[in-house]
Length: 397
Ligand SMILES: [Fe+2]
Ligand SMILES: [Fe+2]
Figure 1 (cartoon, helix red, strand yellow):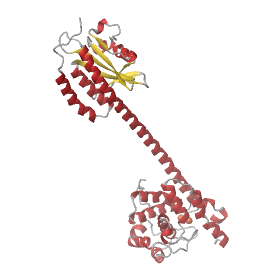
Figure 2 (figure 1 turned 180 degrees about the horizontal axis):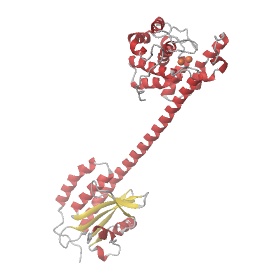
Figure 3 (figure 1 turned 90 degrees about the vertical axis):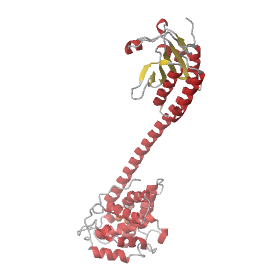
């Protein structure tokens, strides 16, 4: 029997109408498995097949896979299976009217699905000279009809269009997977970075013989000041995480000075003051925003607004803002908390001391904020100077 055109064939205008109907849907779809379903549906209607599927090569698993409907899991076959395998291997199309009379036919899928295949067409899907899969149509719809050369031409047309579209979707999905992987790696690195910074803060606190959670209290007070200064959430977060490193330089101060019970000699006091230079030296090559801010704070948290501080005698806005903020928090906490050499100061004495330092030790606006919201700032200290954590989660960087 020769291949023939038959009454089941669509006219060219019907084919064009179908293409125009599907093109916008295909253009709007970026997921490969949804495209496979759309393309197969378009192919099935254009060549009037009972079943149509686009098989794609899975190079990792050495298999062909397809998706025939939404919500149905994908199908998989070996690379060499039946007519599809033949087209894949040779790059040639297949056009047969009775599959059971062709040695290339793999009847296992019929047996498995209780189906009877008669006429079959397959067309390799090529993109950039590489066969990436095979378009397959099974059983022409109608009585005693078979796929024709014209059907094969039409299948070829759809295959060229499908290959390009699917290639783009696969490339986009690969890029998306790559971007997700990069994002995951970046998150991992960020967590490790934050963890190291937290550990550095703990080391510095342990070394500086501070009582209780001094570095955390300084972080909480600093972030409150930053909030009232209307700094951005990102800057608030940076201050929260950088403030605990303010005394990092104390890791370089001798035990005999750090642990001395009595008053320091002028020479010892000078050595103690060098912790700000040691701190910024340790952080000098920092590249991240967080560690750059930690550098500013470690190096300048003992500068004073009037220029009489150390180590550089910086004045006013020459002092980095984060260090100006941290200086207020550091002194407030030192006064309001008990230390081994003194009890916590009474609230009114702390308030008076901070108020008196407006414009001398501290930037006036920061003291104004502190005075205006005093109860809120001080509410975390109990009458004994014990600090109650706000329980607020730190802002996210
Ligand atoms: Fe310090
Ligand atoms: Fe401190």
